[in-house]
Length: 537
Image (cartoon, rainbow, N blue to C red; front, side, top):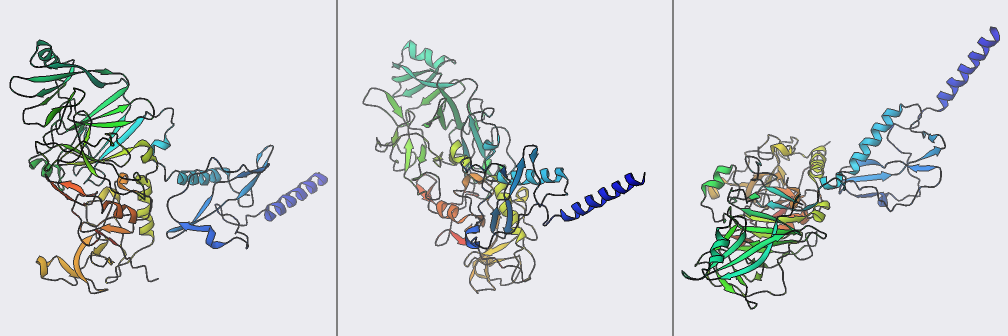
């Protein structure tokens, strides 16, 4: 018994000494410090979201497995270091940082780090590609910051996704009937037959029958709430706070404004056409509508206020430049703009351009402008999660008002239209960011101007709002600039891009506007760089 007790005591002492020697050298989740030979400058880079693990990364040496990178945050910067851990035949061996710690805690840390790697991915990438339906793209209405003022409901929303239909519903032109023949009258009255009617005079009408196309899907956009319309669009009123404000204005958008035809097979090309089919599956172009016969004997025409399209140069990226506005006909041909929106005389045909939509194409319906984003383009776009992370990053830096010394904070995206007591405000002439105060009121211009206490410049003083519609961003840069005069905040390259885009306004004018609220931009550039005051401690 004594020998057994002595052996047990010796074993316990040895185990105690081993546990003491194996005490963790650093807290959980941190790697050993880098070697002195590494360059600090090369380890830091601007915060542009967390990068996903690369599939092309070199394989780890035999016996080692790369652990997820640990991120050290430094304001708008981050540092990444990989910590290898040993692996044996029985499984992974805990490294120095993991000894004596419960395995479920390590799994939680790994899970949280893997979640960070998905920060910059769009929701489409988070779904399994074999299970997710094919998305052709999305239409986003300019002038709304993530949703309609009273919320998105049914087919009336600020953003509409086009998915591959379970059954093809596309159509293509077929038989042409000239004059008021029985066949033409039958085609018009047949609700199962799509057709376009061109009224040349009271006694002459040309009817073009359309037949089913099993290779395409059709989506229709317009003001009407009838069932053929997939996406209901109403007039955009700059800065409107309720749907009643938009509905009270006499609309200039056609009830059946346009249709988009998407190929069901790769590369899923999308093309736009003026006018849409009504509940009787017909399109009527009256006597006053611009119409003509083409060189190959086919009919074509324009709608009353027209459908305008602009394709950006260099795609929808950091290097994007505005293109030229064109008008699209009922048959999808491209023309230069008419003298006025509803003029009878059509513009010149542009033969080297097509009606094919590309990432960043703008579609104007004379009352509302839509942005077309392809599925591939959306996969490179920052997500709402990324924008929320940038908001928290700014708030964590604790910017202060230089006058009241109170901490400023952007409100949550759910309260993007409600002024908060910690809301940042900006002087638009200089860019200095303050909290709200009554200092520096000026009587000029009905008291709307204020004198900045930092630089004494006089100008508008407005609250700052984060741009919450991720589809309008051309990059994932930090929100350092704001549009003038509305105060919507986004990245520098996003403000620079939209400030040079002439958007149609009325029947014959163009001006640059904020994509988040549709307010016409003012000032020399249309945007300003924000100057934040950091905490004094």
